[in-house]
Image 1 (cartoon, rainbow, N blue to C red):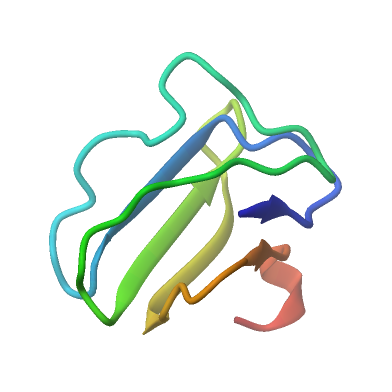
Image 2 (image 1 turned 90 degrees about the horizontal axis):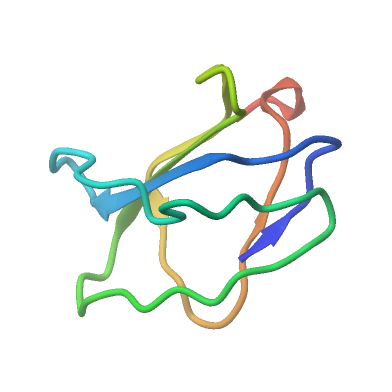
Length: 81
């Protein structure tokens, strides 16, 4: 996953579509703008994603639309998700 926003992502939640968010996938790490992280996900075909900055402000949200074939670039909310 690539951070395509202008800022840091400090909290990243990914769940099977419609399920509870669960744990923060970044743990103690952060994802700087333009940087990437490799994530291992289960076998579900649809995923939800929530990315937040270090103040827990939502910077990106995708609901029931994602299928991770290879690579995902997270874009800011202002892009009209």
